[in-house]
Image 1 (spheres, rainbow, N blue to C red):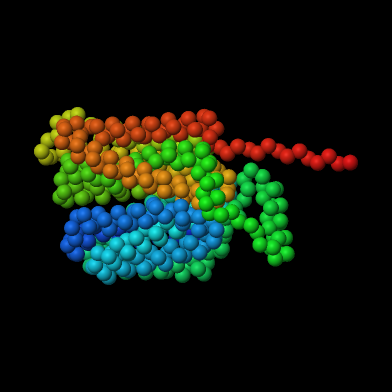
Image 2: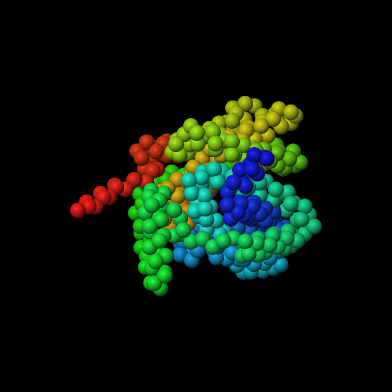
Amino acid sequence: MKGTVAQVRTYPSSVQLLMVNQFTINLGFYMLMPYLAQHLSGSLGLAGWTVGLILGVRNFSQQGMFLVGGTLADRLGYKPMIIAGLVLRIVGFATLGLVDSVPALLAASAATGLAGALFNPAVRAYVSVETGDRRVEAFALFNVFYQAGILLGPLVGMLLTGVDFSVTCLVAAGIFAFLSVVQMRALPARRADDAPNAQNPQAAQSSKHARGAKRGRHARPTQESVLSQWRGIVANRPFLLFSVAMIGFYVLQFQVYLSLPLEVRRLGGDGEFGTAAVAVMFAVSGLSTILFQTKVTAWCKARMEAGQALSRGLFIMGLAFVPLIVPTLVPVPDGGMVLWLLAAAPPTLAAVLLAVGTMIAYPFEMDTIVRLSGDRLVATHYGLYNTICGIGITLGNLGTGAALDSARAAGMAAIPWLALTALGIACATALYGLHRTGRLVPPVPDPQPEPVKV
């Protein structure tokens, strides 16, 4: 950990602040959200479909508005969108803990989702602008802080929710209020046109001087319309192919929260053992990322190109579901040590392999988005990317849930794990194909001939 802290200190103070910011955002979010469904159905007594609707509105408002949030960040600046998202989440979290009417809960849930759509693209674009050619390592560190918040948040939330769920909501809102004040005072303003031109730094510098000269003459720079920008991004075929291929990354990653806990509880039950086994699985997954992310990234960067790292990461994530086939092939006893091992060991091993695949792929994923955008409208590209992946996650989770139910009813419990393995291998193959055909690297512009001196 000392090495990680030392590495963080090599980055600008703004990047350090955003990393701590992301840890605190996840701390506040995950100390509340895992217990929201229980509060809605238990304390408030809402019907299951109403609980699903409230949670679904949050997810839809975030995924559906990512493109808008990214566009606003590129046009208005990163800092205003970060602060706007934090303030909106303060309102959403406080409302969730203080109201009991369904319309108010729906509005609060939508606000928390929209908040994420505002600050997530802005934060990631800001990091890419500030770190330049060190962004792979920067996003590796970013993931360490990200996972640390996910790991610690539910533990804090469990303690606070033991007092009252409204206390959890108000503390989470207070965390975001503190973050808002810190960002307003300490975070420098950055805009999309501050991004360096990776292909031609001299041209970027000349362009910067040209913009400064225009502003000095009080000339207002022209700006593309939003629809024109969106059409240009949609016409970026390599970016769209990459986005679709990476859907599998997020579908597989999400199984730590969906199919793996269900598998633990299917075999181990809903009692203390099942709860403890799920907690251990989360802890092992999160700690492995915190301890080894920067080492894995350094090793991969020294030996692989981005496309190779992405395809290999997805391949490992696909193989993560192979251990889960074992309990479907052997007799499962009604109790004892063997049952505990079958219930806990395969899902935990799967979670570790998913974490390893994520550690390999994630920093290069973020770097590839920036490169395919040509260092232009990074937040907008990230917004569209997240919207595409978000749609994929929704469909993938629906398919996984249906497959788990139907396969067990038909006595073919291995089918969902085989399907998830196949998904990982298929996406890894697609990414490797994009890498081999050069689609993950933006074309280098032809050099302009020097003017002939006479």
